Length: 255
Image (tube, rainbow, N blue to C red; front, side, top):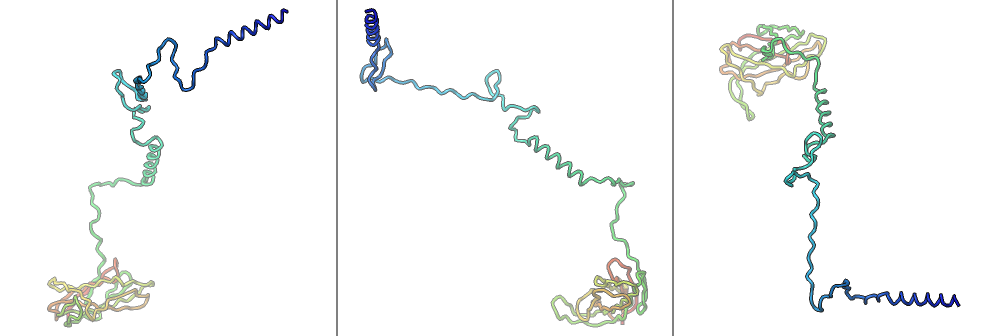
């Protein structure tokens, strides 16, 4: 009897609880908070747009709220100043140090007289004088002589040549040394007694010295100079058989 009463009491409690639970709203129907009247049908409620919040700035600001600029590093320079970073500075210093090491010299000394001028002209070459028809022995064991000094009249045959009186000089070089002597850079000049210079020309029979003269042998060359007049002129002929070597100078009269 007691069990039946307890079961009946529990059933009544369950029914009471179920009767207090509100029914769920229909799907799609708007819900209205308790105590508020729903808006009338057909009316629209204006919506208030939300204002986006401004992003927080990482830049420091002053007391008046203005930005004070980019943050500075320990040296006081802005981080984004655009200059080389620490690694770049280090590399630049290393390159400068390397250049200084390469260009450095330990044996340089200042001159005693800083106002003294250096050489302004090449030193004069040793010169040995002689007469036409004589052999001139030079300190380099080379003997130079003139085999002939005659006159002729040239007729222009190619562009750049001139017609007129000229002097033809034959030069002989004898190598009495133990080594070959180069003569490819030989320079021969002619000047009259009054200072007039003979004008060198490549017209025939011009045939200058070439190559080198082996030890114990002789080489000959012919040089032509325009000179007006050319007959019976007192002239001086200078022969430099090789660049930087002594000069043989001959004086005589053309025939």
